[in-house]
Image 1 (cartoon, rainbow, N blue to C red):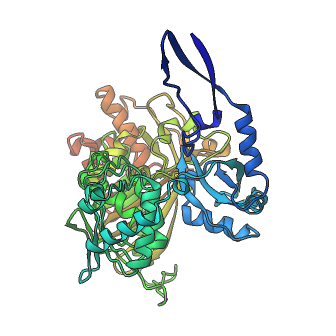
Image 2: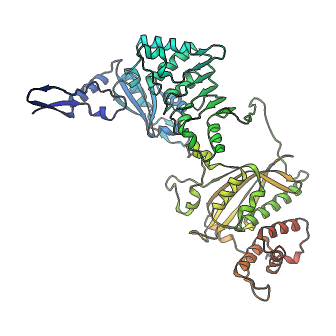
Image 3: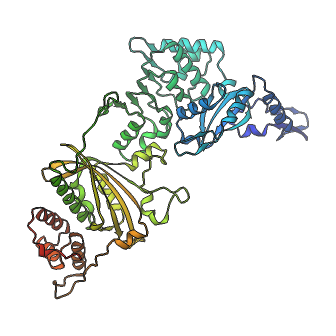
Length: 563
């Protein structure tokens, strides 16, 4: 047995772009001998690469890595780096590896200039962006660049597939095009060199391209296609049907392309959404000008001409009708929270518009991103500055009144202190009313029973009738109450039920009377009477109370005297 060493570049086992030309497997059979190949680290090869790439020659290549680069928009990132860099550069093979952004540049002087940019760029969170520069082998797309003859044949093939009258290019199933197969040219658009060559031809030969069909090309990532934003910005129709795209995040790599029609049928990502409306919303967040998705007409996007000032004149406190609006808002809040705290929030369905939106947020502390005190709210918290996943951002924005009420029912049961409410109406027109309420509430069940929270809630509502409102947008912000807030909250003692004041019913009825008395401000006997008159239906009793109070039909002696 003869043992031989075959040396291997250790970085070749871990670098996506390393070719295996330096690996030589020995397949030699001679009489009476077996030759075994042993792979070992080849230190001379590593040193050779360092010498070839750090000598400052124009042909040397460097790998540029941005940690957590996945959180940044490609256009913003590259423009920011280019603005800070002392020399112009051309990024090659921009892509994402796990949570890092990566590309390659040629030349030691360019690499040195990029290294100087590290920590000079701040993101929207005011955190500095790090840039790491390392010597590299030749990038994949450069090493495997199409030969001139192959480029010429690909150009001829694309011209045959171009429809001049419709300005449309049909590249479906391109790999098996007879003209390419007949010349033994393998064009696989998942490969960056093939996609780069295709986009180069499109940029030069079809500058007015409107429609691009890339269906049935087994695309599972869109790193290479992301350059379409710069190289074919006129594209309005894109067909990606019957590919292998697994996540909407892949589509975000093309965010910035002003698409009007998109086809995604036949991709695994279509089955990752809980329902069709969420699917549409997620795609619209990436391409807001989209008019058709998978052949289905979408509602026309609402566009405001930024060149024309657009102003709704807000009301003033002294303006005519402000007392009526104040009464309407206070009546709405009292009725809303009576139902909200009743234990069955399903009756809030009538308060929301069919297509209303709701979102919940909690404060974010980098040192404690998931505070135990607010753990019941963390999973539903929607912070656009922190959530980078477009699918999750849309999923946490509750659409339709049924989704909203379903999510409200999952939140901890509460008791709001109406006496703590601070209400502000900050805008109203004939068709819209915007107001916010601040206050405190107490959790009455679960692991955090008795905990006092502070909240801010912003409502946008439209008239449902002359005396009622319909919510179209609801934003809730919850935080831990400050040390002083629990002391002032719920400071009015809740009287206990006695046989001398009211008839003693079941324990559940006693609790209902106590809660109704606290929230309505009525004495216990009057609270019980209201519940009894409505067959102990807490929600209906609250609605009747709110209506009668607004009409001034409840006598003063029904209410508790507050010192």
